[in-house]
Image 1 (tube, rainbow, N blue to C red):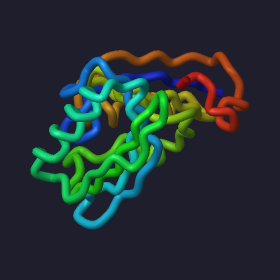
Image 2: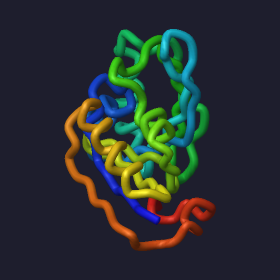
Image 3: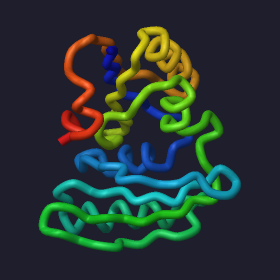
Amino acid sequence: MFLLEFGLVHRGCIANELSKAVPNVRMIAVGGFVVENRGADEIIALDNPTESDIESAMDFLRSADIIKEVSVIEVSPDRAFIHLVSNAGPQVGYCSEAVERNRCHKIGLEIQHGGVEQWRVRATDRSYVESLLEDLKGMGELKYHKISEKGSWEELIAGRGQE
């Protein structure tokens, strides 16, 4: 089993652009769907945001040309959940698609922080993570990556490591 941890400045990704606009807030990509015209319908959680952080995030998203809809759908004591629908996606594709195409399994949730999209994935064969790395290089600036054989497949169920 192989573990790949990577951070990417993802060219053309609205969630990545948002994390650059509000760099002090850790964002968790809770989930989403690719919709018409390669856009996305997704939910992003802001981790421990201030009221100002929420306002800055919403201002950024409202001003982005590719955003069709955006709203704060819930605010809890430690998170704000934002629902957004975009009408276009990254021309280089989504990381989730590259992960799947390269037969890798996502561990936990995607994190966006300070303009870097952060992932942890597992694969049964080293060639799968190496191939994923090659794809990622075409999607933006790979800030870091590490391949190891540590950990357990249990992480796929528990989602540990992204807390």
